[in-house]
Image (cartoon, rainbow, N blue to C red; front, side):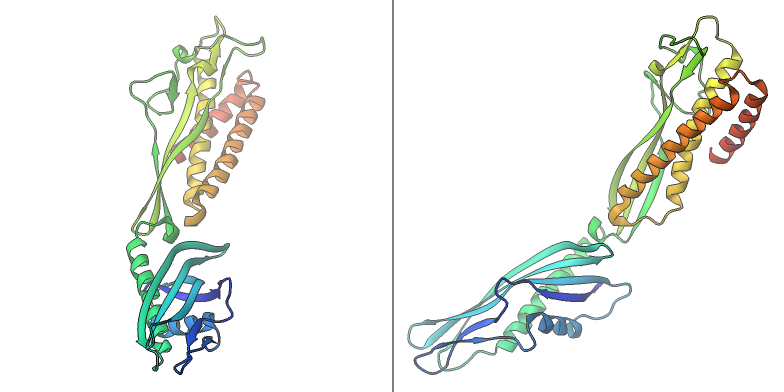
Length: 319
């Protein structure tokens, strides 16, 4: 068994007694019986005996929603009893409990009105049935249920588009050309401008108990977000704009590298990815501003050369 019972909570609406029984002597009056030390302790103690230790077992909590035995007289000499149970199994996490499965069951029995039924045996069988059912459930679900996943594996790919449409997706083999600049010029300050960015799509599934998150990276430049003034189409200006695209690629790869260096919990992998994406996007914006500020939008030739060298070095490390 790949779990152990870390705790049991008696969550019944009326948890005072377990059984409402009939006496074995006429007039067969009803009386109340409880489990020694209470239902929660009894189930926890039973589980400790019944469940064998396993390597890296999962801590499971049982919430007793229903546990009752009720007897009724049928005819003059027969008693019919009904046992109802409902256990909710929860996985214990650092942040609280995660509901896994619910096990309801009903058992009936008949006995002579003059002879009491062995309730200890009845409850032991009921407890064993619940634990066996959950053991089968967890063995069946362990490889594919995200609630039971023990780790996360990130698989990155770079998105490409064929044939190319209205957006340029970053590729070392596909540098920008002036034909990509489709928007009309804005303002009088600069000769050209591009607004690249990066994003991702993801698909997740559980494979052998590990959440596999396939992330398709998209470093992009909409052609409608690039413009150049008439008479300004020269190699130097185009190189300056290409470096903006390169910076977006570097920030996207830093996003990927940061995630791969993390130990990401299976139950909150999306939170980690989203936070890192925002951090990396802010990094990209900061670098873009620093680049334009220090190069005076390409007008400072010496600063442009320094940035070209830095960007080439970073690209060599991330591509």
